[in-house]
Image (cartoon, rainbow, N blue to C red; front, side, top):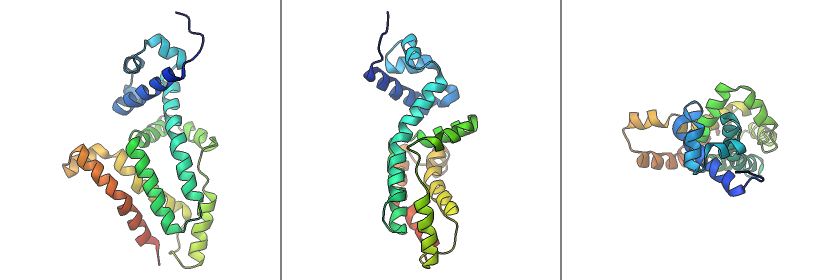
Length: 204
């Protein structure tokens, strides 16, 4: 069989299958044959589209990142006040990751496995801009709207409180002794919980 052109539908099927397998098995546990089987194609065709598991992994990640990054960038750079911005950021992040629960662990695994990957992300045109957010935080401190803190520390707190429940989901579900469905309800409620927790911690 001679393959002359790449089919968009086939590539989409491959990326969806890879996403599912990576989510179940992780980067190291996933096998190209398993991804090919899930996509309903043979392994030779999979290798035609992606020569290695690493390239496929990065394609799946970038595909998801390009969906999330513009949302976060819009929130960070809109004209809403700082408290509304925290609420919108939390809502956007949690809503997105509930649809793509593999993403936080993808980031952690890839950064641990390949530190250079972080540099690639920051160079991506979709990478969120942080400058307007930093200025807004400093202006709010000057205006005595929020207590003195660095924008970097605040952003780390926001990301950590939003991302950790997804990264540690199996452990937290076990500790709380709740089902997947119950945990998703809990996470949905965190949109308000996290935002209010952060706002109450910083406002004067």
